[in-house]
Amino acid sequence: MKLFISILIPLLVGGIAGFFTSSGVEGWYAAANKPWFNPPNWIFAPVWTTLYILMGIALYLVWKSDAVQAVKQTAIILFAVQLTLNFFWSLIFFKLQQTGWAFAEIIVMWLMILLTVLWFGKISSKAAWLMVPYICWVSFASVLNYSIWKLN
Image (cartoon, rainbow, N blue to C red; front, side, top):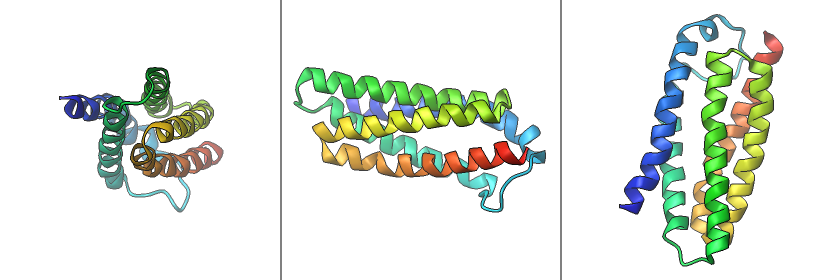
C-alpha cells in the first residue's frame, strides 16, 4: 500500500499540473519563440510520467526505511516541498505565462530537489539515484525556461 500511495502522490500532482500545462501548450506557448533545442511537445508527457514514477519509488524507499525518524521526516518534507514547487512551476509558466518568475521558481525547485537527493542519500542510495534523472531533466528544463524567457 505504501508503494501505491508513494507513486500515486507525484502522479496526481503531475496530472493536476498537466491541466495548466495543456492549456498553455495549446495557447501562448505554441506561438512563443523557442530555442533550437526545444523538444517536441509529445516527449514531455512520457518523460514526466516516468520521472513521477521514479520519484514515487524513491519516496517509498525512504518511507519504508528504518532510518532515524528525524532524518526520514526531513527527507519527506523536502520531497513534499520540491513536489509543491514542481506543481507551481506549471501554473506560473504555462497558465500565468510568467516565464521570468517561472525561471526564478525553477531555480528554487532545483535547489530543493538537490537537498532532497542529498537527504534521501542519507537513508537509501537507491532512493537518491532514482531522483537523479529528475534533477537532470529539471536542469534541462531550467535552461529551456531561461531561453524561452529571453527569446520572448
